[in-house]
Length: 168
Image (tube, rainbow, N blue to C red):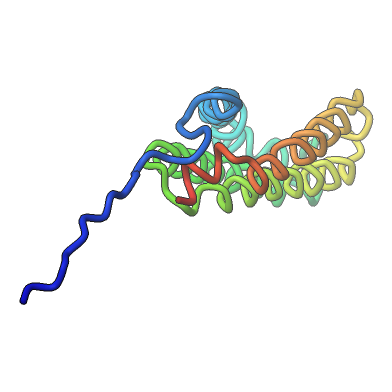
């Protein structure tokens, strides 16, 4: 006597919406723009500030531009830009591989970005020359980052598309 073997049908189609479309298109555009903007920032501002001439201009006590925080600020921004550029590239790779860790990475990405904007702004305000040049753009960047976090962090937590594309 053979036991009755019943064929089980499995439906592998994802439930609901999935894939890299919908609102995730905006995320992709934002990630690529971030890579471009960070690369430009590095090439136009950060690397030139690290040349011996510019470095001496800011950190030499004999310079009229000297302030004790210029060195730490320039180093902080250089490290931040390089690390954040590499992190963004890693996120893009993870995004297109549809890894389950992506929603957590995006939450970290947005949160860290906000914190770093605030730290950078506070450091910049400690330098009198920079405080005089502050035109409100630093606060605008922080406000934009807060709004971005308020929109996209809940999206990555609650979105059906995100869940079906990356978590399943």
